[in-house]
Image (cartoon, rainbow, N blue to C red; front, side, top):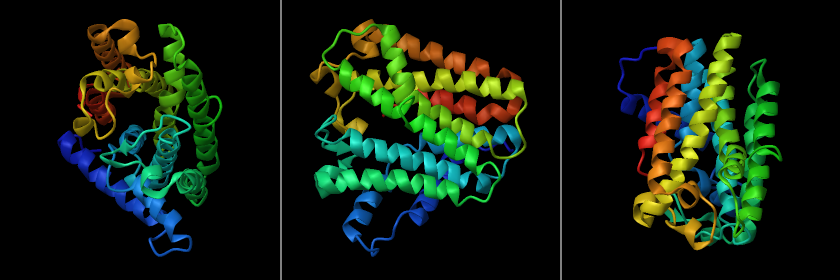
Amino acid sequence: MRNDVPFAVWSRERQQRIEGVLAAALPPPGAPAATLAGAMRHAVLGAGKRLRPLLAYAASEINGADPACVDSRAAAVELIHAYSLVHDDLPCMDDDTLRRGKPTCHVAFGEATALLAGDALQSLAFAVLAADPAPTSAEACRILAEAAGCAGMAGGQQLDLEATGAALDLASLELLHRMKTGALIAAAIRLGSLCGRPLEAAEASALDAYARAAGLAFQVVDDVLDAEGSDASLGKTAGKDAARNKATFVTLAGLAPAKRRAMALRDEARDSLAPLGGAATRLAELADWIVLRTK
């Protein structure tokens, strides 16, 4: 893979690429149940960092995969992420009204339709994976299902609900976020690495260590931005965690220590890539992007 292309160009090209893949996978605006189709497209298209697809594409460069082979895995993990945001924003969860700079799905389409949109996006993710003729498709389905389930994202969301207003220590908070946020980030990296030649054991271990550090770094930075940012800069409601008495890395450790932790995790993520050489350049750049981002 060529690493002489600036990161901003590489990432923009893949963001545009996955936007097209997602648009093609989603039901068209004129489909039966057009309101539901519209809600699904509202939740997925036109905004978002596309971090998880970028991680999948970057991980696939370790074993020299063609980006076309990564498309279905990158799309599937983004569809799961989008469904989780739709459900997370519902009044029964976080009751948010702004997401990615526009009204949340339930505000735009009503709670019942938003619930169905999340359900349909989850189903679509696995349909996209199952349609991929690659021999690793079944393994990809298993990885994504586990990351989204009780031991991963959904379980982490349950821990988050139970932690609201409760005393929590840093170790418990880390576990919560390694499940709620980190599991899907790790899955994106594993899904990308399934493309191309099989990984050697040392390569797989390096990617696992990277995913662990980068996934937690993402959440620490989210907590910092929630404390420092505005609705306009973040594209979502700022300060919501403090308003709901949620434990965060900022409330438990303080703003400056949380920033230092994020930088330390960035360094840990980058250091873990040393055995992978230049093929991991994009993953290293993504670690920087995760920590230095402003939204």
